[in-house]
Image 1 (cartoon, rainbow, N blue to C red):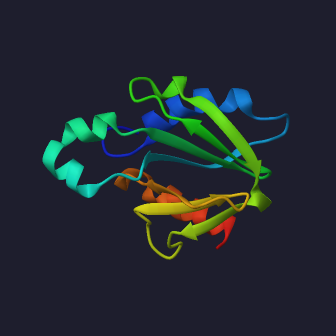
Image 2 (image 1 turned 135 degrees about the vertical axis):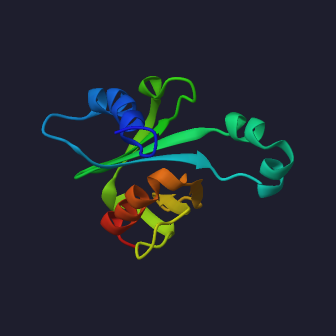
Length: 134
């Protein structure tokens, strides 16, 4: 736990995730991600651009994928946007053999939404991709 892993942030995220779980449901994989952004904006505006980029939490359970709007100041206050049965979530981009820096997901056949995955969360992202299948 500490400076070079995601343990403390995961604990705060779980304060938002656990109350929305149904009886008997457990989060199998949790991934903190950002909205896919224009790389040029990150280069030009640096940290300011990252701070303004929307963040998301993807929580995969045995039944469903739950999507939260991340809270950049206090992760425990992340707000649930919705959930979808796992069978209706499809991985469009992502590589389970490595640690993906991006995951593309299609929800119920809708256009793909791409999430950028910070380095500390890439192992978890690979597990999410693997568990959802391609």
